[in-house]
Image (cartoon, rainbow, N blue to C red; front, side, top):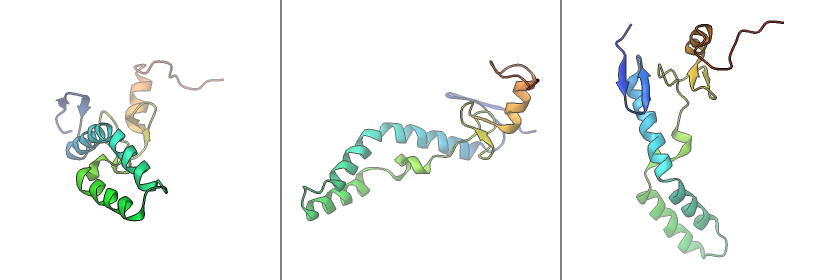
Length: 115
């Protein structure tokens, strides 16, 4: 098993740390540019502005705002392992880690079903 790495903002990452770090960076950039993107989009879709002005605004948007600030470039990953698939978004855990932590009783309010 690869060594665990402790990072600020990300509790533990095992394995694919590069992708998880890239996603963490993209989340920070997306949060920083959220208002700017909304303003640019509102100006570009505003039909009261002339077409040429909207084109200039769109070109300015493409040069000024980084691509990594787009929400579509984000990927839900497990906070512990960095695994991109099978992630419970409410807990930000992959199915493997969710099962392990739930069986250990470390997730509050989660218990095995019994009826």
